Image 1 (cartoon, rainbow, N blue to C red):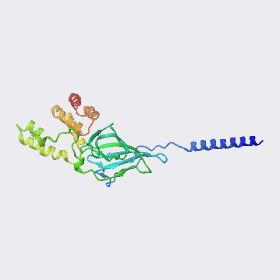
Image 2 (cartoon, rainbow, N blue to C red; image 1 turned 180 degrees about the vertical axis):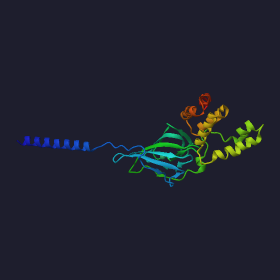
Image 3 (tube, protein in one colour; image 1 turned 90 degrees about the vertical axis):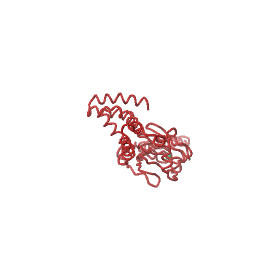
Image 4 (cartoon, protein in one colour; image 1 turned 120 degrees about the horizontal axis):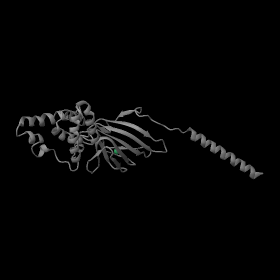
Amino acid sequence: MNLERTHQMKLLLTTTLCLGLANFAMAQELAISRAGERPVTQASAENFTGKAEVEMLFLAEEPARSYGGLVRFEAGARTDWHTHPLGQTLIVTAGVGRVQMWGGPIQEIKVGDVVNIPPNVKHWHGASPEASMEHLALGERQNGKSVEWMENVSDEQFHASLPGESEPEEESGPSRAQQILGGVAPKLAELTDDVLYADVWERPELSKRDRSLATVSALIAMNRPNQLRSHMAIALRNGVTEEELSEVITHLAFYSGWPSSVDAVGVAKEVFKNE
Ligand code: MN
């Protein structure tokens, strides 16, 4: 009799537990945060130099600790030096940027590159001086904390040469404009260097990436293959991708004529092979 009672109790308990769990499971719902509906905030000037936007994508609830966010840096913008208690992974989703660990070389990062930053390693990340950059930042919090902020990345640190990057040509001899134009039209060479490149191209109202897009588009439309060749190479260095240049060529076929775009394809082939 006693045994049977115990058995009944067990059965009841099991049933209650199962029902309870089932209810609990039913209360769980998928959470979808919709693209374009998440808040985008300006990165704090306390921890960043230049303009950057942060779009938090997810912050898992305890006991989970993962987080993910999109950070968009304008050209020249970067984080301060900092560490992450459990490390961080960066996935570049647009543009061209830079990353550096304390005591290490500055490294260029491009779309699709994945950077693993070990726990407690002092580092910074950001755009390149000429191009904007967007990355996904993924990591885990430790005791609710994901980052330890430190000092600014100085202009000198940020503008340091990339490994293998040569100093500007002006330092070591005649500029490209002087080499090409100097013998015949020295004033034009001077204007090219001092007005076009040293002033107009440096104006912050348009990023160098956008200036490259405008320049390449104009040169395709006017069918100027010689200038297009050098400006496609410059565009790649300014953060325009090969896919984007191909798209510009296709787009312009409708505005500047099919022959101009077909000629531009020939130039692009050469440039993509050599860069
Ligand atoms: Mn970081």
